[in-house]
Length: 120
Image 1 (cartoon, rainbow, N blue to C red):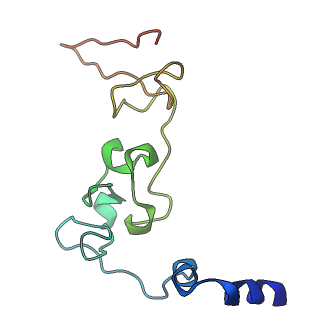
Image 2 (cartoon, one colour; image 1 turned 45 degrees about the horizontal axis):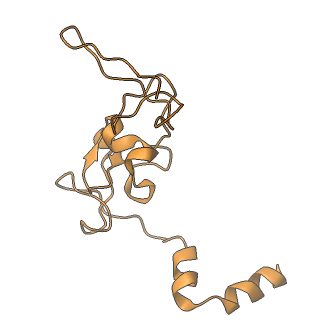
């Protein structure tokens, strides 16, 4: 315990402040905004994920870690999730897990539009 305390005392004040978890919960967003750019609001339970742009939502555009989901401002620490290979829809135009595809995204498609993943 003593070595850890000595290490904390040697940290610059800014690093020490970042290492300390706030004791008071953040206010829940009244208008679906969240994050450090929006009064540090936390998302409500019905829109659990805070996007990198500071808005609350539930789709992969909000909740994928690769899309920039902000864990600190989402409703729970488990709200932000990594993409599921072959399941998560592409959010950046890449697909698969080779070539440009690093996250295993699948291509979007519906009854009127079909798409597939190229070899690269």
